[in-house]
Length: 266
Image (cartoon, rainbow, N blue to C red; front, side, top):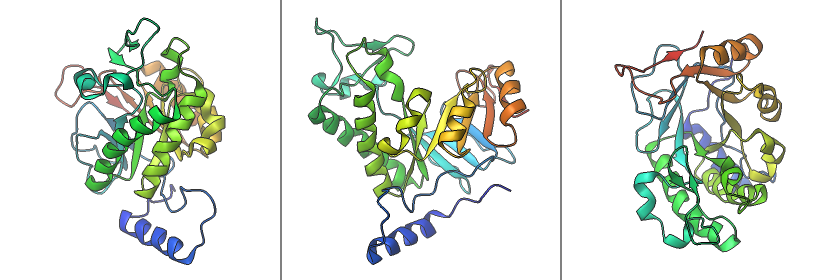
């Protein structure tokens, strides 16, 4: 049976006891509770709705409230600016090419954030950490900083080292708020999970692309897998159905009642 999540209040008391006794082990995620293994999972970043029966883990956008009685993961777009929020970012914190043009993730029309220097990483992190504070105040258990792999779309202006250094700023802050932090995709950086301070993985289509094993090994099966095709779901379940938390969703991650809504677990 999968291990039950420790209630947030209990986790907070445990963390306080550790701090008062000075028994820190050196990992700033001590006392933070990652999601349970192999549990019913739903990915609701396109809009919140009542979790289906059997769901113990729910991911929702930071604008939504957590689902009562579940382990809740707060989705935050941490490495790119949402199209509607571009104007909210200082112009110099948007990554720009040699001609001064913002570097855009064309798939989602999202400008990349500029993480090239320690000073800029600190400034970006202050803004995103304020969102993480909001997740904590709402009662979330964990946070999912999306677009960890944005450096691969940066036209070589950002590096993996930039991404890891910036992620470390987010994880340190989240851990002080007793939030676990999930690595979103980016299988090539699982080897740097300790340097980044990450606690579990959120993988999109790891069954489809034969990457589930990479995440399972790095995070001791604490993996939330979202598949977007029936074929991907079948592959994920065939190899990992007894170990990981797996759900099939539609690509728009829509809500029940929408014409394209899909949610399957078998």
